[in-house]
Image (tube, rainbow, N blue to C red; front, top):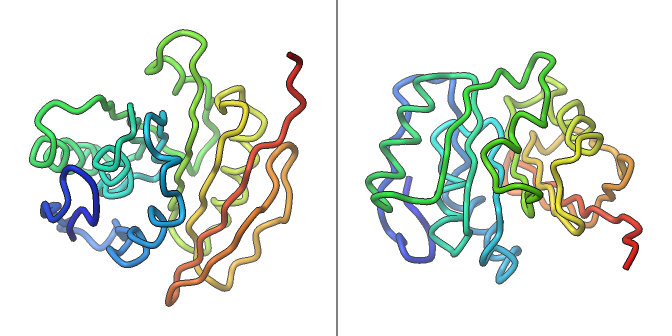
Length: 193
């Protein structure tokens, strides 16, 4: 695994020693960030089910202002920390250990942001076909953690059906890469100006 673009392009990422972590492959990650383009610059990024941290690290390499990595495993936390140190030294990033498969309070994640800030981009790559993507999308939509025009990207097995809308989140795009699928949900909300 390597960073596919940005300031750390070509840097190798440490791979997990366990089959419990399934990292997003380089090809899918590169396609994802090509789709996002300039949207990543200056963004506050939330990487759920982070595993190796490859997606959040890619975001930092391409200009994200901050990345919060969330995973239930301390081994994943150590792997993410090692990958970030190898690529960036001291990036603007944090790790939170949280089991996303069980009930959790998404507002705990805001403690890592500056006051009043919200996430611009959320990436989630749960274990395939365990119905965690749908469940997590619903939690994210209901919590007050998203910026006004946030984008939530879910990676799941290509055969999974995710809903066309969840509250203020509406499906804007769906792409397939081998066995993986990417669902792009845009937040639409009425903003008083």
